[in-house]
Image (cartoon, rainbow, N blue to C red; front, side):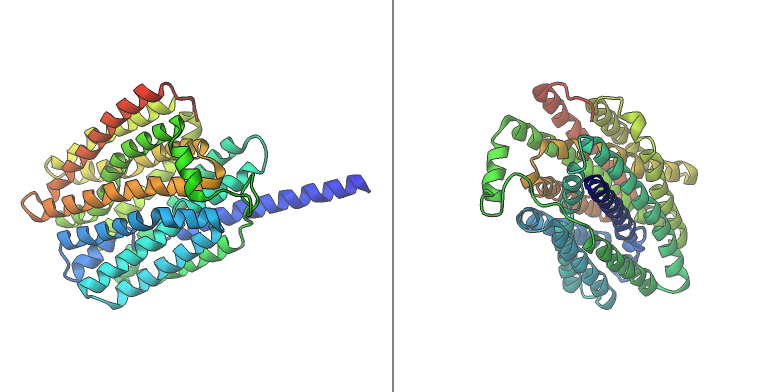
Length: 410
């Protein structure tokens, strides 16, 4: 009878694990189905906004993320991470609906701020939710997280590729409301999946005994490991400042070359498919030191983005964009996993939120600067200026690796 009971418990645990992992994969799929992702710049241009205004909208978005990242991460650590994710999803849905019905500059700016709030509640919390759950599944938690994280990113990019392509088709055949409507439905389904994900309670302390999140953060960041981690976060934020605006403003770049919305959507879709291609090489790259993966990836990006200054060639620049928009995500898989490994469970969402906060600040500045230069003399060749932030990243990485010493494989 005891053996039967143990077998039943094991089967229940296995079933719960399988259900949770599938729910997370479905969440990754639906939350990536932003049918407007590859064409939303064109949507706002069609409504009379210029590049500087769109750059300001994006800066407001990331400024809002910056403002709410740490409070939302502390909320997720203090209460439940899946509720934090659900609040984020609901807020993003409201933002989608709002931009469809309003053309007022100030209203749209407010909606971008609202969307930033939603993204802040989701970022950090969703990966912390997964990592802490996997930690309860045995000694291979770290490798399991890397595998599940890479696979979920792969799934997300495949579905994003499909959504971007279909978004362009929907806009061309039916109009913008259909593309935004499809995104709203997808986000509802993402919320449904995360609602039924079984969350793992915080480790080591009961609710009454648990020290304050703020005190735990201060204690960790005052340690040698914490100080080095902040230096790495500061370095990587400059890589983000180059990679993120490149993807978004390339929509405008290709439109300036005479391509239509559907074709641009297809190009953006191919970039997402390329992400999936790189994720299949995660196991191969695990054999290299994290130091070499990061330095090599950032250096290659900084060099190739200068290609935007060359005379336009369809084949060259589409290929260049697809590589530059996809390869950095392979680097981010390893850096994200490494960061999770360095952070205690009880403040994981908060520390990842600090990373997102720093990223948001650098990306917001990059958006504003790039939008300004595109509207004031440089035109679309201003894209080549995105080589500057990765160069700053390399300088800080040099300091980090000199101080922190050799880092083991992820």
